[in-house]
Amino acid sequence: MSRNTVLALCTIVLLLTSVATASFSLFLPPIEAEFHWSRVLATLPYTFAMIAWGAGSPLFGKLADDFGARPVILGGILIMAAGFFGMGLSQNLWQLSLTFGLLVGATMGACGLTPMTLLISKHFETSNRGRAVSLVQAAAPLNPLLFAPVLYFLITAFSWRVAAMAVGAMLLLVAFPLAWVGARDPDTARLALRSRVSWGACLPYLRNRPIIYLFLARFSCGVAFFQIAHLVALAYSKGFEPVTAAIGVSIFGASSVVFSLLAGWMSDRYGRGRVLALTYFVRGIGTLAMALPMPNELVFYLLVIVAVGPTFGTVAVNNVMFFEAVGPRLAGVILGLSFIVHQIGSAGGPLLGSFAFDSTGSYGGCLLALGAILLASGVITYRIDGRDLPAAHPADPQTLAADPAPMPLSGITPSSLQGPTPPILGP
Image (tube, rainbow, N blue to C red; front, side, top):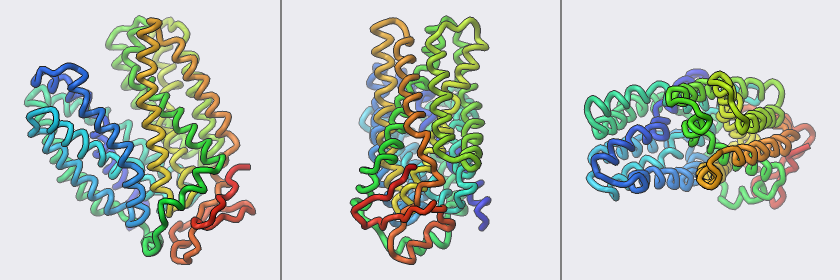
């Protein structure tokens, strides 16, 4: 099977499995109404899902490192489908927390961006890896644009239970067969699975300064999810009508797809670090501008594109840089750990934004602080060029074949994964 076919099928699979992250806001009102719960209680399953997603990502990443991405993705789809079926049958809070919160939440890390990034990165060489990963990445923001109207129809015409079971059926009958055909590790990567590495092998990289910078930048990206969570409320605070806020959400989704593809292509052409920094600079400037008065809807839409649109492009380039920094034998666990850092930021950012608004009645101060953080992330990532990050390979010759197209090392000798000293990654 050609790598382009693998890319196309995996993109469709991720488009389908991303329904788990985008659907709960549609389920929330009818669940709250049926059980007569408070908003806090009704949101608990989603909170548990976010915790399970972050906690499970390193584990599933390590399993993908050791056994290949294919079994992790297939198993994740089956468990996620079971979670949605169970969600449709749930009769109380603990059942919803178990089915959606644990089963669906944890498997977001099994058939989501981490294993897909790992799988696709193995199939493509450095010269076009960014474009390939960004194409898969673009499936995530595209999901709500395509599936939100369908789920809304099912919920209003039938019930939220029918909609949940329909999602489970879609995953089982469509996503799983497509993943069975397309989610395949390259032949060279399968050879590497005969030799596993320990959890401790990643520790030297976690002490390396450029890797720490990438983790810090990923944390700031998570904090910036405040803008996504509060986008509608931000529009209201600027005096705009609900329809303007709704259009702004749609513009965010569409621009995210465009920026994801553009950032991947540019990273292949101009270097990962420079493009990653550019996305942070653009987002930072746009976020600072969001703190200013907005005279009309067009300015609001433009600032949504500039400040929030590049978000998924940032994630795509960052994922590729992690893969190229540590190599295919540790990329899964490193990506998983970076996702925990991201989730901590994405949990704290919206919460701090809420506190700031409750205290001051405005998002202005929070937007100014966030803009400064994003600009600082651009500064620290600018000189980390992904083309100069030496992929780390274990000494086993079979594992050396795991990366089908090793990167140019620019005269830098990579350390063994078992060695005590990490490579010098940045210029």
